[in-house]
Length: 308
Image (cartoon, rainbow, N blue to C red; front, side, top):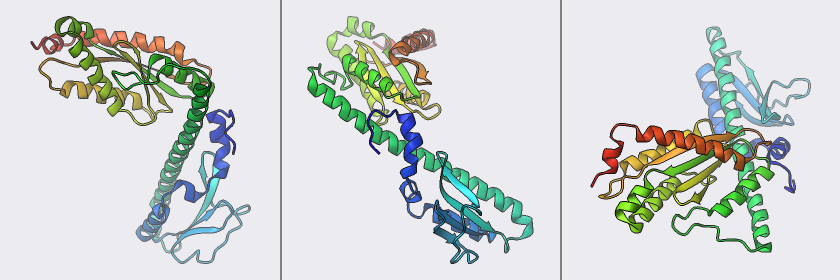
């Protein structure tokens, strides 16, 4: 399917038609689980592709079985609202007292398969889509003069380029997007007491934590001297909070005779395609200032800062 300017949401709805079971599930994953269910409950199972052609069997009941999936669909195996296969089962040899538990385990197994398949599908499509958007952005960059993409001190994106990426995500109608603002605590104190060398080292150190704890799809930019912004497209539940917590833990564990790195985070989320990431950044900034105030009131904060 041609990418063109199709929003990711539309692409996810349409492109599942081009996927088969082999595209989303590692070799042996489905077979191992079906056989485990068969061995545990003496349940015979058969899995077909979407057209009804046999894909996997466990037990002897379905050897050579080719169902009419239109009139006898069995349990439809659906990923992203698209049927990729059908599952049939026979409990003729299953002890009667285990029927209910066996069916429950089959239901749970299918739910796990579907969850895995949907997650893998979204990840594959997202990576391909972002590759396309990167190509579009690169073509745009070649057509016009632009500032350097990377900030020299931190290795993160420059403010100008980060804002371009924000606009690109908005135009692509990608949602949800977690948006984080990170502000280094007491950078001015370090600058006034120790000078440029150590204050720059503080910025670079925290930028390193932000980059090292980020996944490859995270977009990180330095949007002011001691302020960073991070975008996480299509995050998992609590992914943004977990990321911030990991960075905070890196700060607390950092040992240095001069620096006591600390960062305040503010988080918000673009939950629908109508919202604008640039406008939402002010909400993250508000949350960041509230977090900064709370951190500075915490016991031991200034003792750690004024280590010398």
